[in-house]
Image (cartoon, rainbow, N blue to C red; front, side):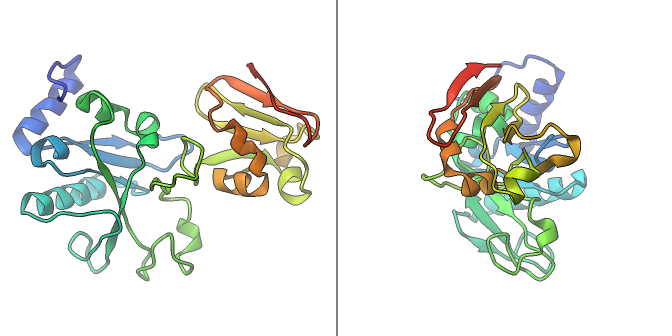
Length: 246
């Protein structure tokens, strides 16, 4: 089942695009802590094949062309699966496809969920390489592009509903002095903070990936399902987390 009842002019255009072209492309240019991204709506309904998402390409024409190229290859009979590499999408460079974990659908692909009336649709992330052809999961990948494409792949051991590469706030003391994380909050806007309670100086603030925080202090995994607008605190590593609404 798919959505057939538009609620506004944008919905009308989305449904019209899917009817006319086979899919609609959603652009998210202001993604706060994530890079700009785009995703298709309708490929699964039209072709019975996964929707496509792409991260880290700011030029809307370029990202639309990429998704449309993948869609047209699918329409011509090609199928892409988790781990596949294709030389037919980008010019002179390969791209890789990764299955997107459905735990990220609600946070990142809400409009696709509206159209599909839930999470019952597959999605592939089209991952682009650096100029040398290295992908983000390879050791020689360009470090300056490390945060451009969040890893949304299926990882049963990852407890958070946010990508490993999501930017989070912490302090210099946590990172450089191994200070214990004693306060965690999941703000209403989706931001995470992992602080030590030893400083409130702006210059001590740091932004790192969620993966780095989890690697540094695995005990924060216990707070992976902390709701928006809630916080947790403790006095020592031996104390349980005290959780309350902000």
